[in-house]
Image (tube, rainbow, N blue to C red; front, side, top):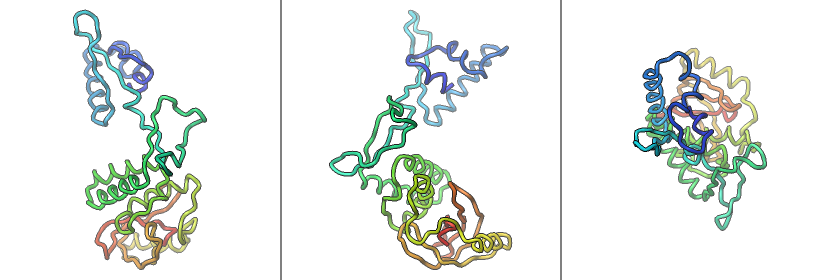
Length: 250
């Protein structure tokens, strides 16, 4: 349905739309297809996809049309301001032309720092739904913006910066501090053994935000691989909260 709507510049009727949606074609009854369409439309709107319903000028005012504004659907290109409000970074585009219809938005460095800190504080609340939303938002911002250039307080921003750093690596930026390109083999084996035996682990960890090494004690919950890096999900014993530790910083 999204693809069918984005192809058109003007509102279309349900009958026109249904011809382009495979699930609405075939030997299905009209009423059944309409129910499918209403359900799908409501579900997409609940995801924030602004499908508009408009009255078409057919004389009786009963014909409805549907449209999806591209400017309301696609995110703008994002750039980080350098000085005098001018863009200091260039967003990645699929080619030299990009998507010409998309708008551009320049964000000041202090604005981006506030966003990162706010996301970290939302994650610290511990609500899984809010955490997923905050992490999703930061992943989207990091696609265009150099998150690794934003300085945040170590305790406040560690969880968010843990998400951002793998993405910075994909753009070709080297890790800061004493991080190694790959975790040491014995670190992986020890953590895996601690997980299997349900043991607390203690290790020296080079932080991402504060550029310092501290002693940590953690109760491991699992190992996961994300954006070319291994992480340990564990409960920090001293801080009494869940944290993600990148293995090449242990």
